[in-house]
Length: 455
Image 1 (cartoon, helix red, strand yellow):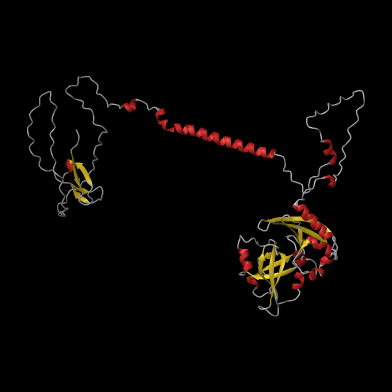
Image 2 (tube, helix red, strand yellow; image 1 turned 60 degrees about the horizontal axis):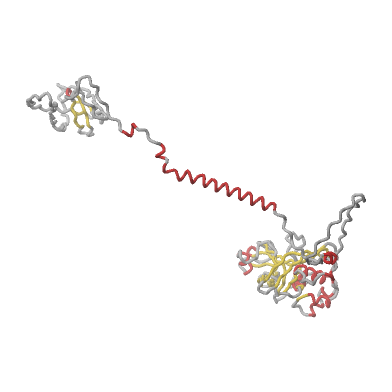
């Protein structure tokens, strides 16, 4: 038999409390907020009406008795000192847990005695195990796609490996010789066989006679007179023209092979009027094509021996215009060659007029010469006769320019073609600066007309 309980709310913390009916009207602390409260008294229970007995076949009817709502408990009044109220601890009765499902009735009228109660019916989904193949129906495309992708990657790797091995097996590239091919007269005579004639049958060797070893073929240089007339290759012709130009001894012999804007009087006083020093080597440097002017420039590095010992290097230019014969461009050579060159004469003493020179310009980002006014705002230009970066000889001349000048803007522009520390063939305009410090004039780079040696 379950114990009857009384449920009410704490007037302070509004917590729902359940106590046995025997504790109605008792004062005690609230289990939540520890405030002394009084359990409500039981209301008067009305006379329960008489219910007629139901026939045996009908189920018993339960009568619902409404319970009055819990009334608020008035604040406890201080009791007299003579009669203190009894203090009792109110045990909290937790409500019984409800079953997860409604229990099966045990005393149904139509149930036979000895019949076992039927348990809760099991659903069909729990009886039949789930087929795992149903869950895999959506992954069929993925199972096909993964092998296809794998096979594609494997085929790509095999193709790349075969391509690499094929490139490794290719024969080295045969560079075309600069010397024109010459036909051999001895071989051309033997190749003239009438068309439609069968070759003679080979002679069977005589096994009884001793066999002499084969005579090695003697390579005979071809006769140029027997070869057909062919146009020489451009670079070979440029080299031949330069080599011939340097080997001549007089200006009259060199004039047909050169191109210049220098006056005849200056040419007669230059180094070209006599023989040049012996050459150590002549090496092709670079070749540039100008489709606008239909010309090709061939640069050669020429090393001369010096009379005082050692060597000196200069870059010389040979230009071919269209189908014409190549010509030696001598103005850049006259600007830098020798102790009496045009550039050395201009840098000897300060003059008022600016001058144009064709040289190799090597730029340095700083100016270490403290005698130059505002040297922290300038950079250095080394003027050379060749483009060798490992040249240990000093530069022919040193010029300076401001970082905010036109040349400085070219160095800041990546598309201009002028780079820091990289020698470049330029046509440069120089002048003497006598305004910043008249007592100490210095050579100033005014501008760069072009990054070439064109006139």
